[in-house]
Length: 309
Ligand code: AMP
Image 1 (cartoon, rainbow, N blue to C red):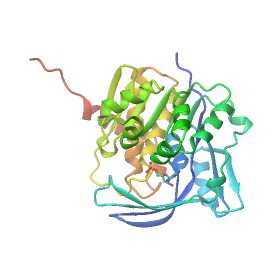
Image 2: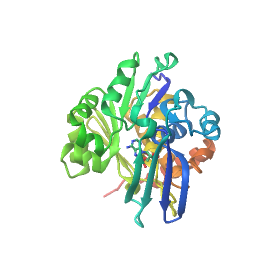
Image 3: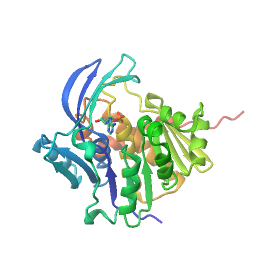
C-alpha cells in the first residue's frame, strides 16, 4: 500500500567558496539541507529546518520558494553570519581539501520544529551534531521513515551519540570512508553489513563516481554514477543523492525493495545534475522531462540479457 507523506530535512544552509579545475566561485548557496531540498523538490515539496545569518540574501530565499521548499523552519539569526565553507578539489575530483569551516550562526543552532512540520512522515537528519539529530527525532510526532547522514567529525568526536541515532533510524546514507571509520571494515560488503548490525536495516553507501550500494535486509543493489564527460563541481553530490532518494520515497510512500531501487536511481540522477555545474547552477533547472530521460538512460545502461551458458 502506497502512502505518500510530507518530507522534513534538517541540516546546514551555507555559503560556499569552491575551487575546481573549472574555476573558482564564491558565495554559492550551499549546505547539506540546501542541496537535499532542491534535489528532493524534483519529486515532492520538502520542509526545511536550518539557520542562516544576517547576510542571507533575498535572492537565495527565492531559490527555495521557487522550488516549493517550505522554509517555515529556516531561522534567520541576526546575531551573526551564515555558515561558510571553503573547499578546493584536486585534479582527481574525488579528493578535496577543506580550506575553512566558519560555523558562524550554525554553532548555536538548536533546531526548532514548527508546529506545521510535526506531522512529517519522512525525515532526513542531515549531517549535524548527533545530539541535535536525536532532539529532532523527539519532536516529530509519528515518523514513518527516518534516514540519517553523518561525517568523520562526529564519528570520531561523538561516537556514542552517533550510535544512539543509528539505533533509532530505518536508514543511513553515508560515504564509504565514513562507513569504514564507523565499522572498521575494509570492503563495501563488510561496511554495509557492519552498519546494519548497529541498527538500521537499510544502508546506502555512496561511493562518488563509483556509484552507490543499497543494503536492504539481506539484499544488495548497486547503481552506477550516471556517466558524465565533465564534472564541474562535486560539492553537494552526496546531499543531492539523498534528496533524490528521499524525495522519491516520500512521493511514492512505497517501502518495498523494488521501490527502494527506484530511489537509488532517483538519487544518482539528482547527484549527476548537481555535479554538472558550480553550486546549484544546473540542479536548480531540472524538471520532470530531464529526470525521466536520465531514468531511461539508466535502464538502458544496466539492462542485460541472461547468459545462456
Ligand atoms: P558534500 O559535497 O555532499 O559533502 O556536501 C558539501 C556541503 O556540505 C557544502 O555545501 C557545505 O556547505 C556543507 N558542509 C561542509 N562542512 C560541513 C559541516 N561540518 N557541517 C555541515 N555542513 C557542512
